Figure (tube, protein in one colour):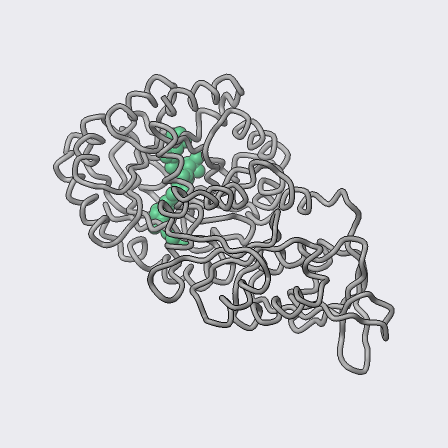
Length: 424
Ligand SMILES: CC(C)=CCC/C(C)=C/CC/C(C)=C/CC/C(C)=C/COP(=O)(O)OP(=O)(O)O
Ligand SMILES: O=P(O)(O)OC[C@@H](O)CO
């Protein structure tokens, strides 16, 4: 985003946006200074609606094209508060960690501060990942010139607590995995706790308000992330995801049943391939259809080997995917599937008994799989009590997913009991 002083059309700034995704546009608009008027050049139709979400104003036609002229709403803008000051902001806390040598070594990332050195780094083409700056900085001449250069380099911007620049050392170029803060966050959860706890929200099962209430409780209870998805969706995902993201600090991770289950309002997506089945559509077909949209929406993909395990009843996943689950008494078949997932470069394995399964994944199978792989293991389906969750962790699960039980009885106490049982 580049701001130029503007007075011809009764605005404070003429704003040039270099963005191709809704997410980066949103982040840029968050950085636009409050109580100032901007004249935004509308290069593409979709930009207009998104600007309208954040700024109050109208489209104006001029002889040099159409523009959106709007003023940034007052200080109560939720997004603004979230980005700048929330203590638990995941990116900000990650950046804080990088201040220590231990943090730098652990993540192979640096922060550098000061516009001259940052400018030099941009100029030298260092593998920069994210540029962080304050709202004040964007309006200074140094800020303008640096942001112009950074926009030309296609860097992602983030308005942070201080003007800082983060970049990775090591290999050239950007890797989606190296810059995948959600995956890094999952690994941090595992360093902090014995295991992590994910709660699945099924968009079919709740109205927006109910979902939001549930999400707030999930966060309060100490869960580590919210999964959003279902095997068959008829509800519009966008408003639900948007509301959840506004109301909680937890990472919002899509858990898709097919390539239509996407929204730019989430942080990441379990990029699952149904490796227990032999249905090419769920091994690679849906993934190919979704890939360009995941890129456009700037979702962080988490490549995951998804394995369906017989759970005593025919589940939605089994029916929808037209695949046969791995028999629950055959851990020796499950093990090599998981190992193959790791060898294929997947970052997680998910053992799924199916939502509402009569029997959850057997402990023996969890242990066999865990012993074969070094990537984190997610276990879900039919886990109905904190005691059972603890047993799965003891057997080797790194992350536990619960869905139905909280839809049936979403009490804060029960969620807390699950989080505590899993965290150990
Ligand atoms: C990577 C992308 C974009 C798509 C991959 C799609 C794949 C491989 C799907 C596997 C098969 C499938 C239908 C998985 C569904 C996973 C899921 C969200 C399960 C949880 O929900 P349900 O089992 O539907 O729960 P309910 O029965 O409560 O709806
Ligand atoms: O709804 P439940 O049975 O808890 O299952 C959660 C999840 O693993 C389904 O994909």
